[in-house]
Image (cartoon, rainbow, N blue to C red):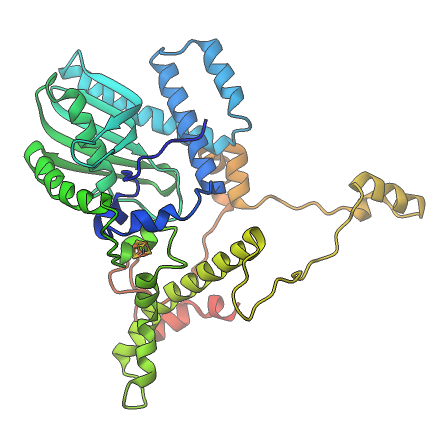
Length: 391
Ligand code: SF4
């Protein structure tokens, strides 16, 4: 069954809080399920099954049927899902020690429409006992570490969970937690009930604006990329932000200052990502909607030759001509990522930890607030990274 999303969703909150016009803008685009999103959905389903089995909420036969329905599961996904199950169970057992009637809800629909028009979402794990309520959100991505601090998605889920439990339990503190195993990231935020409600009131005003279709104001910022806004390829506000670089054409004197160079470096990466977004959008319209942009046509791209018969058939043709089968194939060891997928992270580390090194990466210029330590003076950096630079 396709997933149903609220118009003002918790996962999209970063966008509609900062840019009220984003709701209408994004509605012009279809929802496309990426390979990464499908992988994340499978990991969530697996984690849910494992917790339910552990709690004996499903019988072994149902568990194994549902496992089969999920299809092929890589060993590392099993390991991450079990890590998530153990983490949730540990938190739940801790609460049970002081609150025997504590509750653990898995994949629970949470309705926060009191604050956000039509707002609802699904909490991966919600634990409630006297004194505290915790929302745990599994993130399966590997791109960016997601912090729990100031995370509007989790705070909205918390507001939704309070609707269910506030009158049943004596809740004073709300904890929101991100569990992101593939990035070794566990991050939590504790909020008093009062602070969460104050935040809810402030957000309710923004939500009202975002839900109002007569307000089309668009405000570009970090939320466009971190929220993966679907409208980035056509959004004027986003384009204006990206093309701020154009001002350097008119800058005097003719030589750029150090500060200007720093700003150009900072913007260049996001500028090239934006250019790709626009090009992908134009290609999609041409291929799928037969709409060409002026001055462009659709042609066949370059392609490489490939066999159109099976390996066995080709082997037969060649061995008949006197070639030996072993000459025709090449064996290659799987890469580290694939090998971890095959056996899981802990087995990989047990068997191969002495066989893996991490050579220094090429020196890279990053903003001063990047978490990685600086690599020292430029002379010693040049010495340390001589090999990496030459490669
Ligand atoms: S790209 Fe940014 S500014 Fe444009 S609609 Fe999306 S969130 Fe708003």
